[in-house]
Image 1 (cartoon, one colour):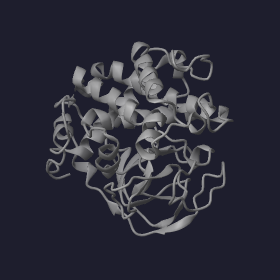
Image 2 (cartoon, helix red, strand yellow; image 1 turned 90 degrees about the horizontal axis):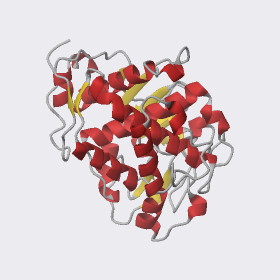
Image 3 (spheres, helix red, strand yellow; image 1 turned 45 degrees about the vertical axis):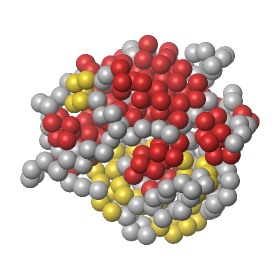
Image 4 (cartoon, one colour; image 1 turned 90 degrees about the vertical axis):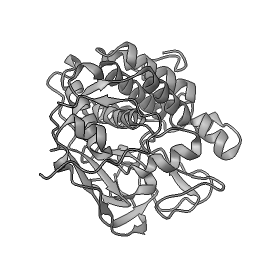
Length: 335
């Protein structure tokens, strides 16, 4: 196995979330990944950010927030805003087409992530601990009795990755869940670029919130909720309801995490930062920051206040999936 990886998370802001140093980590579902292949529309909204810092060689056109977007893989095609959109999309096929991606890089040796102390000292190991915590939490939910199974993998990649059912994707896409292979894909550089430009903070708990949201999509996949999505845009659309429900599921995990043996401490500051992240990725906030106006007819994820409200709703009902039923909610503003 070798020794623990060198600490790599010292740059994270306001780092408060801690893992149980004695917890034993299961790395069997977490890996580094990379690979070439075709990549196009992806599953995000391509938005030009004037003067913005970019990563992955995409200039100022950045694909935003796929962890909150319904990707091509979920059977809902992407909405392209601004300039820079490219590639073709075939709704519901789980395929990408368009730009050619180069070779991707493996992000590290997850086999050396053995304990919670490793997770406290290394970003990649922290993702392992988060995944272990979320798997344990959802496995314990009586509402999922007989239906739960862990995601196939959490793939932490760099630059490009080849999925097992949703084509190829580059780091510019951001984190996403592919239902076809039941896998979460994430390039950590997403947090340094997108969150900085939209005013968010890159902290351990914000990363956990993102991963918990993606795990929420996995739960939706298991329950067949993704099949309920018919309308793809608008403030009351099924797309918005799907994303708000994933936020709610993230809140459920957050409320229960400290009791699972993996997470030692989630502070009030962590929760504040998580709420700040929810605000940062609201449709109205993104539109206002990137276009200077808000058009509710283009909503695909919900407003900042809705994202915050449903995240908080999940925190009040950690033992009841029914409490996160956005599809039956008459008023998405007041869960």
